[in-house]
Each structure stands twice: as C-alpha cells, then as structure tokens.
Length: 341
Ligand SMILES: NC(=O)c1ccc[n+]([C@@H]2O[C@H](COP(=O)([O-])OP(=O)(O)OC[C@H]3O[C@@H](n4cnc5c(N)ncnc54)[C@H](OP(=O)(O)O)[C@@H]3O)[C@@H](O)[C@H]2O)c1
Image (cartoon, rainbow, N blue to C red):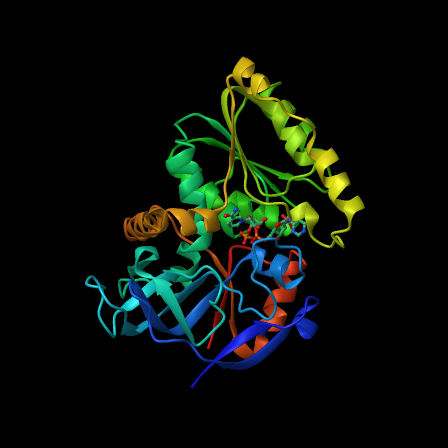
C-alpha cells in the first residue's frame, strides 16, 4: 500500500492537499516503478495547486516533478536498470507519492556520494538551468547575463552555471537577505528589484543595451524591460510567469498579462540579431524525454566535478508539506525545498 498527496481542490495548501492511498497499474513497458524516499518542490507546484497552471492534469491530481528513490519494479524492455537501483527521476506530475512510475529515458542512477536532497535539486531546477544556459543558450566567457529570481532554485543553478562559464552576472531578488546570499554565490551585481528599478540599475552597471542573455521566469512588464536592455546577438529566455501568481485568472487578468508582455514581430528579432527562446521542460519531457535524461546526467557529472553546488534551503518531513509550500509561495525560500516521506 502506498500513499500520495493529491490536490483535490484549488486553493491554499490547507484547502488543496489531501493524503490518500494511490494505486498504480502494473509498470508499463519502458517505465520503472519507484519507491520514493524524497521529492522536491518547485514553484510550478504552487501554480498548479492554486489552479493557475495550464499543463496540470484535471483534479484530483498528484503534483511533483522529481523524486529520489529505489526501483521497485521494472517494465518490459527495460535493460539499463534493475530492482533496487537508487535513482533520480523526472516524473512529470505524480512525484508527491510513495510510489511513482517514470519513463526510463528521464531517469538516472544516483551515485551514493549524492544525497537525496541534492539529487532532487539537480532534477527540475538544475536541469532546466542547464538546458537553457548550456544547451540552448551556449553562454560564453565574458557575456553579461541577467538572472531574475536569482536566489531561488533555478536562479541559484543559473548563477552557478554562469559563474562556471565566467560570465558577468547580474541577479535580481526581493530582500536584503537574498542579496547577501547572491553575493556569497558569486553573483557580481545583486539588485533588489523591490527597492530600485532593476532596468535602471542594469543600465548604470553595463550601459545601454549591453546585456547578452536574460533568463526571465517572471513575465509581464519585466519581459519588455529585459528586451530593451539586450545587445545584438542576445538570447532572451522566457520560462515562467511568476507575475501571474495570486491572480484569479479572469479574462481581464489575461488581457492585462498579454498587454504587459507587449507586441513583438519576427522582423524585430532579425533586425536586432536577437533570439527569443521559450522553455517548457514538460514539453521537452513529453516529446524528447532523452534530453531530460541527458541534462540529468550532465548535472550529476557537474556536481561530481564540484562545478555546481545546489543550496538546499529547507528539508521538511511529509507532515510539514503545507508549511514548506507556504514558504515557497510567500517567497521566503532560497535554493531547493525538499520533502521526505
Ligand atoms: N519552464 C520550465 O520548464 C520551468 C522549469 C522550472 C522552473 N520554472 C519557473 O522558474 C521559476 C523559478 O522556479 P523555482 O522552482 O526555482 O522557484 P524559486 O525561484 O525557488 O521560487 C520562486 C521565487 O520567484 C520570485 N518571484 C518573483 N516574482 C514573484 C511573484 N510574483 N510571486 C512569487 N514569487 C515571485 C521570488 O523570489 P524573490 O523574493 O527574489 O522575488 C520567489 O522566491 C518559476 O517561475 C517556475 O515556474 C520553469
């Protein structure tokens, strides 16, 4: 018998979560069933819990993108894994459970030298950062890089990857404590976006139109601001819409959001020699799961080589899941938040 945490209605963590038994079918071909020890939280879980995440399954559903655990059963045609293997898995929902099934193309064996907590950090957040910065963005030495929400999970990963590549890093965050954390992380120019206009601050630091790469999970008018800061040859990543948090999702909200993003034309990108890259790791997991496997392995290797060091900002027992969710929702976390069964 295994339990899972379901979202049974949208709302606060107290209203939304319910612990119930989960019954999985026998392991499908190409999949493994994992007995879960630890799972990670992601900001997208907050969005799906509050009903603002389009890709979430219909209610009731089990959220969660990543787990560390041991293989309980292997499906047909699985040859690279065996029962008992300790693995890190990208789960594409279903992760808040004692048992989950995962496509073998999106899992990797986890060396004993990597703790569960670090393992789950390497999954969605570091893999997303790696996919953007290294695979799609190909960031280069000396490039000037802007990381929004830089003290968070993906943000921490992006700062460390940009540091590895010897970029000049500007990071935004929303509190004095987070700015201190960013300094320690090696971010050259931490900016508190609550006390100053980050666009003006970036211009003061770099000059007009000097930014090479922007990593933006916020959306809304920050997208237009980033766009104004970019140089020729720049890459602009949009990978989230945190500004949508706390909204009711009405038609008016949607029109306002679209308006804040502004209008763009492909010819503008041609003329300025710039790129706009949307990133949704769920789509990658659906259509190119082998890329998830590759990015997971790349992150495991970079950790083993001591190039990246996930910051685990909190480890909670399952009984404190709601508290962990509330902290993440209220912007009170740094790095990775982890839950253990
Ligand atoms: N597209 C993808 O495949 C993909 C994959 C992973 C993550 N993401 C996105 O990347 C972002 C970061 O994810 P994460 O899991 O690493 O979370 P996180 O950064 O650890 O936590 C979210 C942080 O976002 C900042 N933030 C800015 N505006 C916010 C707002 N309006 N409401 C709430 N928080 C706001 C807060 O930091 P400050 O206090 O510094 O503002 C907050 O701590 C999220 O938008 C997430 O959806 C996308």
